[in-house]
Length: 168
Image (spheres, rainbow, N blue to C red):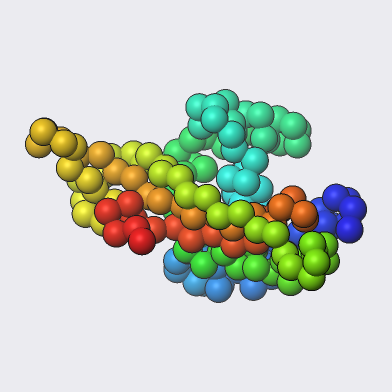
């Protein structure tokens, strides 16, 4: 399957998801109902396109490329917070169903699993991701990501995110 076919399938899934927006926001009927500079699809696409730059730079790069007005970092953050936790796993699963894995080695899928810790901004109200620093009274916040990658297809097929203190 060519990258352009997979891209088309992804955008078809994204637009179908937008049509069923109530299933993917925290407050159905309220969140993502008004026209904003940062739409439902733009919020998702910008998150997927972010790299390691500052948020303002990432927003400028994404929206300027589309020749659109760039939302403020605050506006983007507010839009992003409206998305529920089921959205991104749904998108990955739906894409893997729409573009099934075909390549095998002796009838086996070759997959690699790797884990990494992701640092999070400090939030004194968050006890789930909080970790006490060794020999200190200070805390830091992390989540752990385990990703399953199909080596022959060169794509991620599943991911599990856990609070770092409770990872297994």
